[in-house]
Image 1 (cartoon, rainbow, N blue to C red):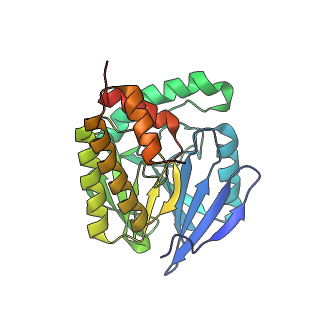
Image 2: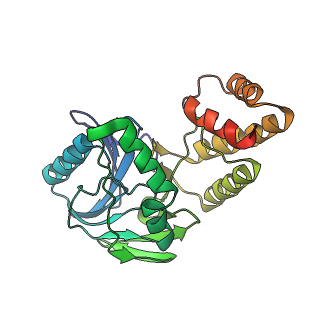
Length: 266
């Protein structure tokens, strides 16, 4: 499946890219919200599951309307890294690992939610979903579609074999990422090299449109260069300037600034 082989549906605020392979459809909803969220619906024969929550009220309303208009019945929500927006599809079963549940209700995910409530006010749905079905590593079938749950310390990633796809929190081949030091960079590289070995067609993330393995390799190269630059710099400012020069035009300056704070703690 090619990342550019999709049908686009334009909505009043966001838009949806629809991919299809062997009767299984991926509806990639680009929210166009203030934090560039992406929400995914995987569907077969009118039944599907949602991967991650939309967290702004206008996007919640828009995606619910899209599902209704498209005749898609959501039988479950996989809540990994984004648990805010609990008014979305209220009453739908919610699936998550224990680590994701803790991340969203008390850990780093909850801290982000609290920050977003303060930043965006009434536009942001800060209610946190209740996990109804705790899942572990391995296969899970929703709406007749098998996925593979890959837990990690924060939450979990998801393989979707029917689409040749894998979902993780962040990639973005031409934007900066939050990297919490050299060890974290190495861990991300190892994870991404696993995606290369797995031969996935699509890499889905909750802050970018669907990407492919060329994008994965670009990100690996970025992370290695980021680590090299950090080793040669002696301050946050020097690091930020050097990375900006090495990767001109990259978005996510705020993420680069956060990364500098992890590499240089003065």
